[in-house]
Each structure stands twice: as C-alpha cells, then as structure tokens.
Figure (cartoon, rainbow, N blue to C red):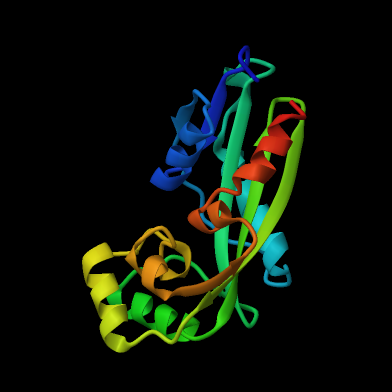
Length: 190
C-alpha cells in the first residue's frame, strides 16, 4: 500500500509519529508552526478539521512530487462546549483535570490527507469518561508526566488513563491523537 508515494507527517507529536510507524508506514516528518486560531462561530468538529487543514498551509507543495502525501491532524478535548487545548502551566493542567474529573468529555481529531491536487478532511469523535479524580491523583500525574503537550492536559496511554478512565466509546487511538482506522480509510483513496 502506497509503496511508490512518499508520505510526510506534518506534526510535532511523538504519539502521531509512533502510531504512524505502528501502522507500517515509512514517512518523513515536517514541522510546521502556525498560529492555531479559528473563527469563533465554528463548532468543535469544524475547529478540529480547520486546524488540521491550517497546518498544511505552511507546506510549499511546489517543492514536492505530484503524488507525495501529506498527513496533518489536530486533536481537541471538549466538555460542555468548552474547548481544552494544551495546558501551558501546572495550574492550567490542574484546572483541566479537575473539570474533566467524574465526567464524560469528547476527544475530537480533525484529520487531513493531501497531495498537490487532492485534499480530504474528516474528523473522529471519541467519548471518554473519567472517574472522580482525587487532588492527590491529579497532582501526582502532573508532577510525574508533565502533560503540557497534550490536549485536555492528559495522555490516555499514561498513568492517568490507566487509573482514571472508566469508559471509552470510539477510537482509543483518536484519544492518543491520531484516528488510525479513519486514516487507513483515507489513505486507501490515494
């Protein structure tokens, strides 16, 4: 599958890199720096899709072959229409986990796959429910795992996911930051 096409992952996420490797793809990483701003009237799914497309705006497609494939993804966490990005401080991470504690939230990834002549964007939604987390559990997690590069302030594959998640409905890998099954379907169209 896709043996003759070069694949580029437009992401800084080590988890996306890991998952794409586990899917068996050879690829190169392109780092992009875009300001993640979006229209205020967008729904959460529109935001995730828009941000995944936005990351590709920094790619100069003229430097690449016609059939080179570019993959970008953006993941957001949503609770009661409130969007949780990546916490910048310990206080922000604490507040996010306190708000997610004992509740069900949505993890939404926007996923864009593109070549010079074709672009497909989709999204994936996973419901995640946390038990009521104690302050001690929240502080232990933040201190030991420093979740400042993770939407919602947590990584499901880490300690907090092992002890705190009571249910998950949807794609587990979406919560890690890359809806692998959806990506496989999208790549089949290239």
